[in-house]
Every structure is written in structure tokens, then in C-alpha cells.
Length: 442
Image 1 (cartoon, rainbow, N blue to C red):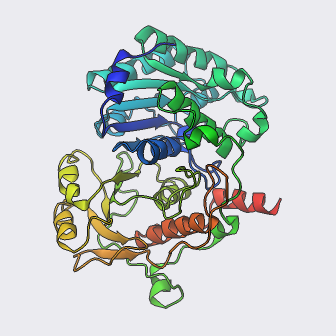
Image 2 (cartoon, one colour; image 1 turned 180 degrees about the horizontal axis):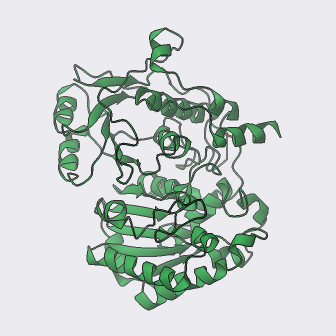
Image 3 (cartoon, rainbow, N blue to C red; image 1 turned 135 degrees about the horizontal axis):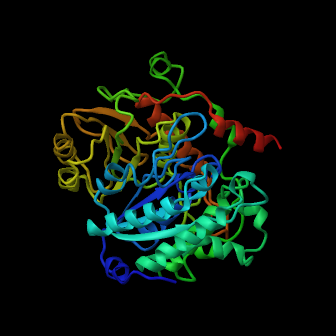
């Protein structure tokens, strides 16, 4: 396996900024069924288990290719390389992990152009001082007539990694070796991993980088996850502002004044930054949580259900909002649409919060999210989204590494939906909801 010698130097530093990009397998929607995608599991391991102060950003887009390429309907894929300026380089990452090729195969992207684009992307990442990592996805399950030559694209990824001395995480070879037990449980369909498949992705990625010890919760959690959510809850309408005002919901949903309407700049990403206490509401068992946090549910609404795939939602863990001004000062190149500040235990009182709010640029909306167990803000000068009534009750299952309290999982789901409503992101039930309901009824 090719290994970039600069990677180990990077991993020796704390506070790294990781950026994952690619297609739907990295985007991680629909087939995760309310559980965390592999990149979210990596983030949870880095932050919660290893205690690192790393930030993990995901700019993958479902349906994407490595370069812009025409499709039969007359639309173009965006292309990772084509949009690299705002999608890969603007966030100034330290490590960039790329997994792309499933749709290149389906659309017939020329293999030589595919190889050249991957090589150029690696060169661009390195020219900006970051460390690239290339990854392959899992083999196709069954027969996909549109992707019969997919193994040839996988081989080109290996060739680029070898020629450029890039670290390669070869998931395709790992799954093809057939050492994972029952493969059926790892697939959501022919080309997408199910929740258990995403867990294996995260396990292998972290293992290849030397970051997953045998006693880590993720390393031990090798079973198919049990249902920790009530799938029917995904079909409930998000409380609207009007409903909240009319008293039809117990949740106080405050609209974020000045939040930019979607679709104004379709060719630019407009991240939503969530800074501060970004932990899930659910309590972990064994230090690892397989279901989505409230912020990850929020991103699911925005990027998948509403289809605004370039409006990324990035959660930035900060020990105190006192660090928010410095963090925001370094992000002037990002055209972020809004900032949510989440006060944590170290943010008692209102002065730190007011200072953080003052640091948000004039072009971005802002709101304060108050978590369960936290004091309310003192004169924050911004809209407040109150989640304090979503206190988690109940006990977690005993002896199941990687499982969580179902009540906590439901609280995260409701919190994500409530924040989405406050941002004006209300949406009717999506295809993902329909799939969840069908599975629940099966």
C-alpha cells in the first residue's frame, strides 16, 4: 500500500481539519436510516474517543463525479475537481480524503480523464499544504448493468495512489476478500452501504491510519445496529413558525431573522456553522454513538430532503464560545450563510455569548441554541432556539458497545427537526422518510 510520509507528521498534531469529499457514499444520506455515516463515525471517534480537537468537514455530493460530465437528462454533475476551489480548498483543510468513481463508471467518464483528474486533485491538495488520502468504495452488490466496468475505475484509484505515493484505503479489496461475514447486512442496495456497512468503512479507514485500537468502541461494535429510532417520527411534519405561534407545538421555534433564502447562489456553497457544545443529546454507551446527532439530522434535512447539497452544515466543537471569535476570524473566505452558537458548561453568563455574536459577520444570520441542562442566554441579541425540554430520560441497553438510549436518539431527531424549522427549512416527508416507513412496516 502506498503511504504518504507526510500523513504521520500531520496526525501527530492536534486540532486538525479533516475534509471528506466524493459522492453519495461519503455524503451519507438515505441508506444510513438515521444512523451515522462513516465520516460521522470517524468524527465521533476522533473527538469523543481519542479526545482530539479535530474538525471534520464533509463536502460530498450525492450523484457526483470527479469532473463535470454530461448526463442524459442534459444536466451536468458538479465534479469534485471542477468545484475544488470552494469545495476542497476554501475550508483550508489539513487532510483531504477523496472517494469518487461510482457515478463516473455509470456515466462513462473516460478512464484517462478520470485518472488525470484524480492526479490533478492530489497535486492541488498538496500544493496548498494539505495531505491527500484516496479511498475506494465497496464492490457492487449483484449486477449493475450501468457499472460493469467499475473495477477498472477502482484500479485507476490504486494506480494514482501508487504513482503519487498517496495513502490508499482500499475498501473494495477489503470487502472483496470476503472476510466480513454476511455481506447482505452491509448493503442498503447494490451500490450503497447500510448502517453496518458505514461502520465497516469507518473501522477500516481509522485502522489504516493507525487510529483505531482493538479496545475502541468502534472496533468492538461489529454487529448490525439495533433500531434506536422510531421510524414513524421521520414522517411527522416539522413544526412551522405559524404552528408554534398558534400553540400547536410545545416547541418554541424562533425564526432566524435574515437567514438567506436557498438557491440564491447555486454554484457556491454556503455553509451553516454550528460552534460550541456540539455533542449529541443522547448518552453514549462505551464512548461511541451509532445514531445521528441533532446537527447531523439538521444536515440531512438541508442537504438531502431539501436537495441543497452545497449548503453544508459543519459542526465545530469548541470548549468555550470564548474561542468562537478567533475561529470566525479565520473563516473570512467561507461565504457562510449563518452561525449557530451553542453555549456549553464553560459559557455561564452572557458576556462570552455577546462577544461571540459580535464576531459574526454582517452577511450571516445568527442564533443561539440552548441545550438540555444548560442555562438560558442572558440578553443574547439573537434569536434563541430552545431545546431544553428535550431532556433525555431512560436507560441505555446494557452490555451493547455502540448502542444508545433510544430516548436520546429520538431527542436528537426532534432537536434537528426543530432547528431546521427555526431556519425555515421545513420540508414535506422525503424519499428517505418513505423508505424508513416501509422498513418499519416490513
